[in-house]
Image (cartoon, rainbow, N blue to C red; front, side, top):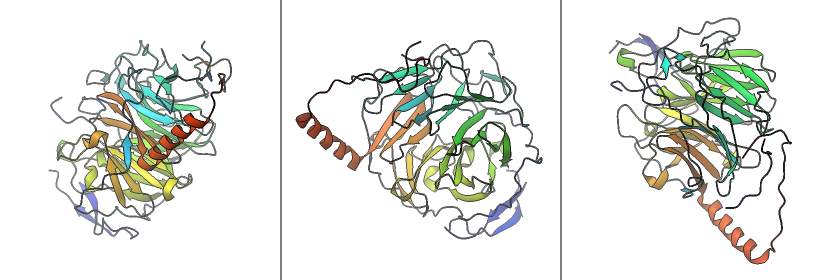
Length: 441
């Protein structure tokens, strides 16, 4: 196969110098915002193999044609293991009350509460799809797939999304707490109002149960990122290697990306070309909405692109991440930080952790995981705007983890003690911020 290798892949703030070469194939909560009314290595989420690849996305007039010329090259690598981060596990947070299916996505609303997207009684395995299409197109998941948890105790505040979804995957909340989700079984992306409303989407993109690569079809879309302007990006996904940008009302503006390709047995020698993807698995916005960053799963890296044009800007990739990178989240706190979570590896013994990166210098600052033992199969990550709280979800074991920054934890404990000693008890009345039509617990 014909590939490009870069002569200086590890130097920050240097231009790529690439040469073409030929490679041989080898508690108590008071919240009433919502009133009640296999043999080969898997490239699927959960144990299935032999992922079919659709033909290359046509380079039509909607495709952005900017020349790929990076501002930052591959981040520096060294042989030192990353330092242990100051983030600490909040034990038993949200675990006792909640019974999850495969937990695939997590988001944080404007009040700091946590929204979780899970698959209930359903799981994704080798028998779930026939080619790219779902085997069972009749029976939606009967359980509530969306759970809103209190930021303090992790108690369930509200739950929605029963009898609607078939195979949940991605989730985000915008500045108005509208809920954006992707369903890889339906091949669709949905926008619901804050509080889920009547359970009727405000916006639906994609064609129900039909996979494709044109302007009206997705093929297992994975994630969504919404700009302050209301414009949004969709990563598409498991069988299309592209990211699409839409106007606030759902009109396609442009798309970018193509397949990285693969070598013998699904393995590729050398570094994949910037701007190509091997399962664009999750999205996050960075640098005051100037960039959209893509967790390029099977290439084990995060690529960032100009939000206005889709032009490639920078890339993050480290030896400690290994070959697979599942999700990433950005916070403007501390000058800009990127948090990324890797996943099970085909080769090697890399610990599965959250990695903290300085967004501007690309310095790998540290890593953390439950009890410093590593995760098993993490799928998504979310970070609070102030950078103090981080949530990670796993699809085996089906779990949600909360981590908080050590200094913030100490301050929080002190404030709690002072409040308990000096503040009289006040009766708090339930508040319904989202109207009378929202269904919940």
